[in-house]
Length: 156
Image 1: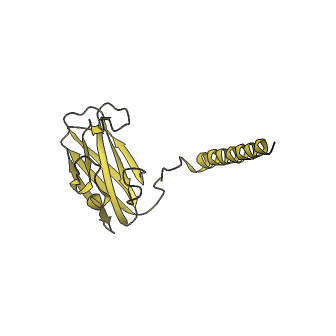
Image 2: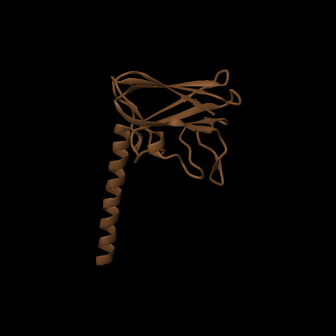
Image 3: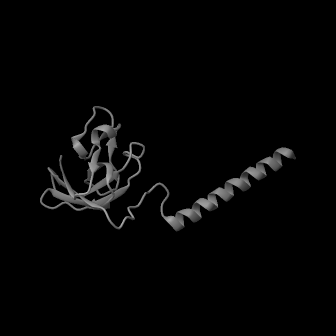
């Protein structure tokens, strides 16, 4: 009987946490997605060239810490490709350290496609950071946003 009561109490607590999480998600947006709700800040414009075609779209993420790097975007952007080029604009970015990663989502499935862990779609990272057989490191990709709008150039 005591085991049954313990299990019931555990299930009740788990249900409470699940309901609370659902309420918070509906009130504040998707958990783990940090939206850019700032009304003032710097504009970071990313110019991307070197596409093989205008097919698909470009998906980009702006990251603001080593803990969130390539995991949880501070800001994200999706755009089309014209004449083998794309422009991504992050508005109202507060001063600080950031990194950008982007990829050519050629098949528009909203995923960075890989085969056996190896990317099958073109990608680029700020500062042209690269690593063999591993994602680029935050230390290599980060850049400073100050008090002046800035432009970054990427090429596949």
